[in-house]
Length: 152
Length: 152
DNA sequence: TTTCTGGTTCTCTTCTAGAAGAACTTCATT
DNA sequence: AATGAAGTTCTTCTAGAAGAGAACCAGAAA
Image (tube, rainbow over all chains, first blue to last red; front, side, top):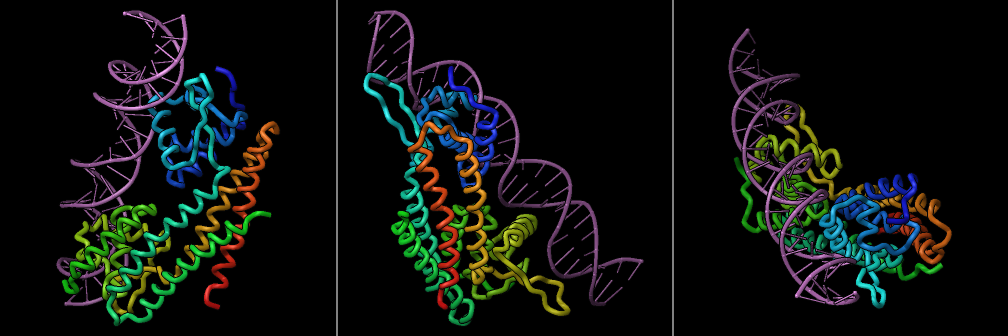
């Protein structure tokens, strides 16, 4: 198969991969996404990915489907060609960002429920908790504004 | 040992625990932190924690040290008392928040290095990547401002 | 000195995530 | 109808995370 990676590219895939592992991706998923970010071609097929990363078919399949589910990658098809051409969706980071911000709601709801059930005795602690909870709401609101206002 | 938890408190520890597991804490760590957030006493000893959560000494010790290392909890001592009294540091969320925002730097650095090594061919893709990288910087800056402006 | 308290560390076990490889499926083409 | 391409699913295998319990250790007290 064509399109060999340079050593530098391999290195970048590893380092970016590790960072993405730290963000909750499995090793294989992290590298697939990194590959799609680093590679000279913006779109790669299943076999090109498998080949570039030396992964088994199952690992490739699972990694891809993982990333598709979390909407970190997408794919296109071409008429008269059964293959799927995968691309990272880093370009559409806004949605991912918004989702992660919305993810804070569950956390905050939990904190609010704790607050409602806490003893009244510990006023200082409760006030701190309340402060944090209110900050979370403020932060969510303002973060969304930051994204909305982002168009230099 | 004293200070039994109500059923509601146990329930809250579990649900808050699960959420915190989703944020990367181990089950035991997640529950210790949740306990310190939910319990009527703001400070609990090793044995009170162990007892409330029915954990082994090793699990308790590891969970506590974990949380100490990530600065999610702290402790005090009292004169003439060898015990440590642990408390959650949710009240000092600002530091934790700032750290998580600073954590984005490594991610962004990696993206910048990728950009520097990408083929020039794919201008649209590269522009999107650049846009994202710039947004990250903007977001970091502005997030810090959000914290600074919070209730001041 | 021995004992007690407040943990820490070591060993063992269990459980699960992740990956490999082979078998299988599905649609398209010959 | 048979073959091939593009994946998916099933069956292992392995490494490491979590936790239990026992052994250990350091400082205080008796």
